[in-house]
Structure formats: C-alpha cells, structure tokens
Length: 192
Length: 192
Image 1: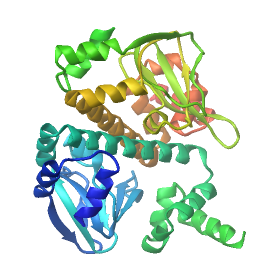
Image 2: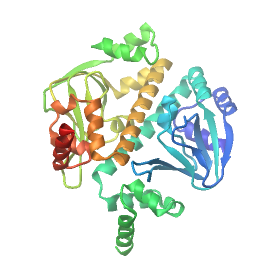
Image 3: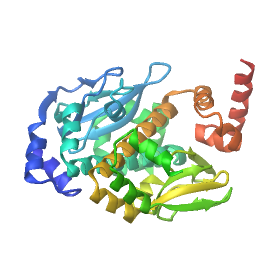
Image 4: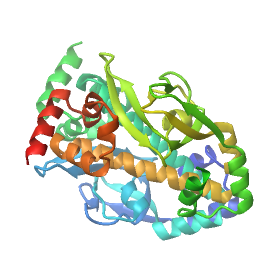
C-alpha cells in the first residue's frame, strides 16, 4: 500500500528516490481489530498514521461523558490525533477502529528527522498540514452556517460509505444534532 | 515591527541573515481604517498578513445573511483567510478591521518563491500551519463539548481585550449563541 502514499506525495512535491527510500525505511505496519482503541484521550499521539485499509472515528467526551464524534478517516488518508502529535501533549481525542484497520505509521522522532534531512519532506509536511487546516476551516463554517439538514445532505453526497459504517448516533453527534433530529431529517430527505 | 516577526520565527526555526533579508525584502506595509474590509467573501486571498498594530474579525454569512464571527486576530499574529490563501480559491470568509490596523504582508507568489529557496522557510510555514491547525481543533472541540457559559469564561480568561473591542452580538455568534443568551451568561458570571 506504500504506492498510494507515493502517488499522494507525487501529486504534491517530488521526493527523490533516496528521500523516498529513507521515508519508507521509517514506516511500520500496524493492524487493529474492529472496535479497538488506536489512541485514548490523555495519551500522547506518537504516530502519524496513513490508513492502508479500513476506517476510524475520532471522538471526544462532553461534560456529560457522552461521546461526540469529531471526525472520520478512511483508506488512503492520514489519521492521527493531530494536535496531540504536533504539540506532543496529551490527546483530547479518542481514535477508534470502525472496522479491521491496517496502518502504515511513522513515529514523531523519525518524522522530525526526515524533516531535518529533506527540504521536499518539509514541504510535504507543510502542504498536508495546510490541506488539513483548510478542511477544518470548511467544517467549522459548515457547523456554524448550515442547517442540520444541509449538513446531513453534504455528508450524504461527500461520504455516503460512512453512513453504512457508522452508527447513526455517532453521525448525529458529528453533525451537532440529536439522534432523534437525524431520524427526522433522514425521513424528510428520503421522501423528497 | 519586523523584529516581532523575527522573534516569533527565532523561537521556531532559525533563518540565516540572508534568508531573513530576502524575507523582509518581500514584505509590504499596508494600513486599513477601522471598519474597512480587508477581504470580502468571494475574493481570493492573495496575502499572508502579519498584524503590526490593531485587530481584525473574520466572519461568514449564514443562510439568513446574518454575520457569524469565526475568528479574531490581534497585534503580533498572522491574519488571513487561510483556506482561500492556501487553495487560491474564493474566500468564504470576510475580514474586517476592528480598529485602525497596520499589516506587514507578503503575496502568495513571493511566499511560494521563498519556500522554494529556503528549507528553513518551508519549516516555518509547516510549523505555523500546524499551530493554526491545533488551534482550530481546540476551537472545534470547545464548540462541541463546552457549555455556552464555559465558552464565554474561556474567552474572558484568554482574550479579555476582545470584549472591549468587539460588539457583543459578534462575540455571541463566535460563541455559537444568541445575544440574549450571552447577556444572561454575562450577568450570571458577573454575580458569581
């Protein structure tokens, strides 16, 4: 599955073969079963992970200890508790395997080493941080300006597979609504 | 005010004097009066701006054409419509000067040139994108898990000056509540 990372990188900035080999030498393979916790709140995220197969959910606990989903990631994308990884501080986020999952991952120390060795590696880090930032800004604006129904339709159009994988209660918290509201919206959208 | 940018950079990664001189040569000074629009929704953000003096508000329009504040930036910080800048696509965000403001800014093209010239420049870009991303994640989690009163107290403790500069209706939308709810919370917090 390393070729998928290479394809992604090649579309952003070209690593030399030597830089790529160094990058690959630092990757480790790690598998988790469906339902396993990849990271728990309070632990420090030590890995930048790329999903080779499967998908995961990011969630936090609110004041009532209810789970609030804040993100989903699937095959072909990076998946870590980014703030914790960047700051090397305890994570606010839990990361759970939604199905059997295989990760290619790199430790914080190895990634810092690669950044120091390679200008292009640094560039790939910058570009991917920027892209993730742009997605976070888009989600914030969506949460603040779209109606619940508009947010559901946006999810349906952009990530229909998620609705098969994830319990509706988790989809509801991700959309910032109650499961009851989501049921009503789903009925309304199905009829229209 | 350039020394403030140098101090910030020096705490993150050390540019050589030559790299710093090249960076400074690409900066331009730009001033806006209080209330002026620094960027309007639909325009492409062409500048990465550092606030030398003053402060600004980022806002979007919701479906009812009401203004929803999504961020505030003040002296000593960067301030741009980041998604628009990164993607070079039309901005969803309006940027307004909250008081007379002076910016040191750099065009997208010049910044890309500096990135290509300097590994350390690329590193500074990565680090600042990561820090901004971590702040966005913190805000998302705050919006989803804290009560309105907790969000207000967090703002009061972390950015008390904002409450003097910004109309309460803008603070309210930033906290995701109505102005009436904010008035009730302010009274409750003042009494307690």
